[in-house]
Image (cartoon, rainbow, N blue to C red; front, side):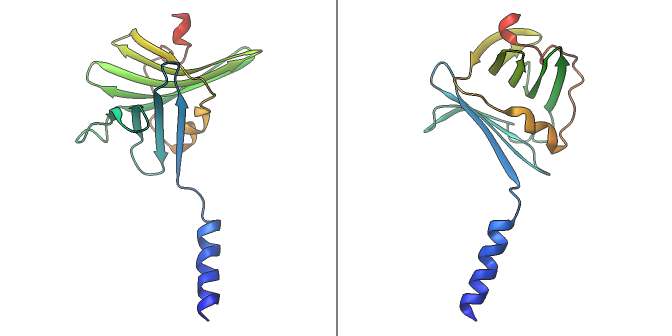
Length: 150
C-alpha cells in the first residue's frame, strides 16, 4: 500500500504542469538577467551575478504596478519584451528575430532614452512571456524595437 501511494504521488508530481517559467541569459558583461513568470503572480526581474543580484524588481510594495509585455511584428519576423517600471527607469528584457538575424538582451531606459544596453550571449526565448496574461504595454513600440538600432 505504501509503495502504491508513493507511486501515485510521484505520478502526480511528474505530470503536474510547470506553473513558473524562468527566462535567463548571460549578458556580454558576464552578468545575468533573469525574469520569472508564474500564472497569477507578479513577475520577478533580477540582474547581477548568480551569487548576488544587484537589482531585483518589483520593489516590495509595488508588486501590482509597472510590469508590462509587448510585441510587434515586422516583415519576416517580430519581437517580444517584458518591461519593469521602477520610478523614472524602465528595465526591458527583449528578443526579436527576422530573416537571418536576431537580437536579444536587456535595455535600461530613463524616460524614452536608452541609458544602458547589454546583448545576451545566448537566446533568451522571451516569447512565452506573452502567454501569462500580463498587462499589455500601451507605450507604443518604443520598447519593441532593437535598442541597438536606436
